[in-house]
Amino acid sequence: MHIPENYLSPSTCAVLGAAMVPIWIMAVRKVKSEVPKDKLPLIGVGAAFSFLSMMFNIPLPGGTTGHAVGGTLIAILFGPYSACLAVSVALFIQALFFGDGGILAFGANCFNMAFVLPFSGYFVYKALKEKVSETAAAGIGSFIGINLAAFFAAIEFGIQPLLFVDSAGQALYCPYPLSISIPAMMIGHLTIFGLAEVIFTTAVLKYLQKTSPNLFQDTQTSTSKPAYLLTLAMIVLTPLGLLAEGTAWGEWGADEIAEVESNGQALGYTPLGMETGFEFESMFPDYSVSGMPEVFGYILSAIIGTALLIVIFKVLASMIGGKTNYGT
Image: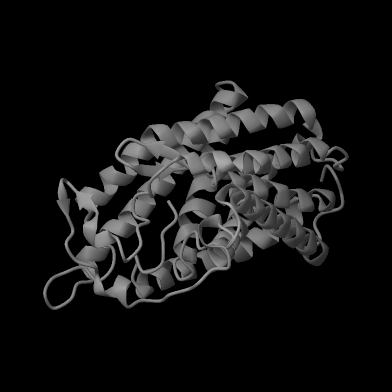
């Protein structure tokens, strides 16, 4: 679901980035006023959950892959505005250090995965949790959240060839119209990837409810060790994400998109905006480390990303504070 560089026009990226600015401002204000100060650093652990879950690639028949995001989980734990900040920072770390998602497309990726996903998933969860079990409400919310995010991404992909073409009528950016982008994105998310999001959300939620019930109370946090242990276990297991072969739909490089087949036919050209567009070289592309075996590079990338997220949110906690009066 990560939109790469040059799949969206600069104007599309600018509009979605601008749309995120007031959301981020509101998120900082809400977190400052609603989240207890002692819990703020734990949002970094939630961000690490999201970051790591996105490293567990899952194969889909046909050679594409996808992953869970964990946005609804973080929203249930800390609130949707906290989830917005957590997933946004995780996406920024992924784009900047690992080349997962475009720098120009950062606002678009945040709109889909840090806004649409956690807010929709959380409000479905809140609406259902008094009518069904909390686990069922969390599962349904997470399923709807990730599918709405995928649907918005599909729309963003699909409108590009309608709006941006060259003099020959060829697409300048993403070349796949809505008739292709919507089913291509939704088939995987309505099945395998949506199920992965449900399993991840409900399994982690039940684990934390059992081991760290204080996370669900508006009181001073005293037991965060289980959350850190779970983070460590996820880091160790991240190489499982390497078992999935192929590339997520809509994340092909400019050097390969011409040969990608859709409806049994290769595109046959490289969109000019993708061929000559913005380029950014990340430090650890595709979570690899130069000179290091793939598995160890993947684990080291997981460690680096997790450490950065935890440190960033510890720093943010000291800067923005947080509420200190529990129960108010």
